[in-house]
Image (cartoon, rainbow, N blue to C red; front, side, top):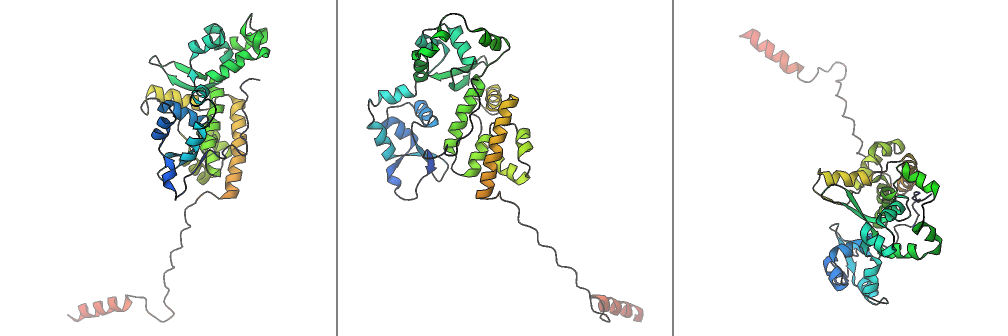
Length: 308
């Protein structure tokens, strides 16, 4: 079935986001400089990192850096820079339909059925979600002879029935793709578990992660939705809704992945817990025949008052 959630691979984070070495800092450049040297706009550069086309490293301050060797690798690639730009070109519905030589309505139906997978989205000024797709993937789909019946003629009855029932797999497919990006960024087991937890409502996380300290750690590492508008704005609410799994089967798949990854993270290093409180020392009990502290002083005070 199109759009079915893909289980997270064990090596999904390998080789993309790593810690920047403490030495040899001169061989690293900022994202802005890397974008200029690669002939990309900053939005194109960010998308290339998102897709894993460009490897980036995390520095001590939590920002990103790109290795000089990575830039040289990309610049030495065949057809640079046009080939790199083509691999990250994102188009909307109108341009995508023209590229595939189909009407906009058919393009939208194919996307709703999960046959075309969005790479990005943004809310427009009317608060409608605009989906973007990789032009390279659209061209490959249109060129595949197996897809020819879907590009012309009537949509098969079984697919039309799904559309009539309101099926729209665009958000789900975007989440699956975005999860791959989050896993590539994760640099330790708890971060991988938190990447999956980022797509679940906190209630659904608590159903499979019972320990409150583990849930607290996952919440600290939880990734926020892509930035759209100020926090609390309608655009931000749309992004948060699209980031959260909705259908029961998708939730179940993510919960299963979260259970597995949390177990791996726990085996690697338990979640931090408060240090146990040391019991207060018990009050000293005076030995038999010894007056309690302060008793002699009180008796002496009484004796003096009586003598006056």
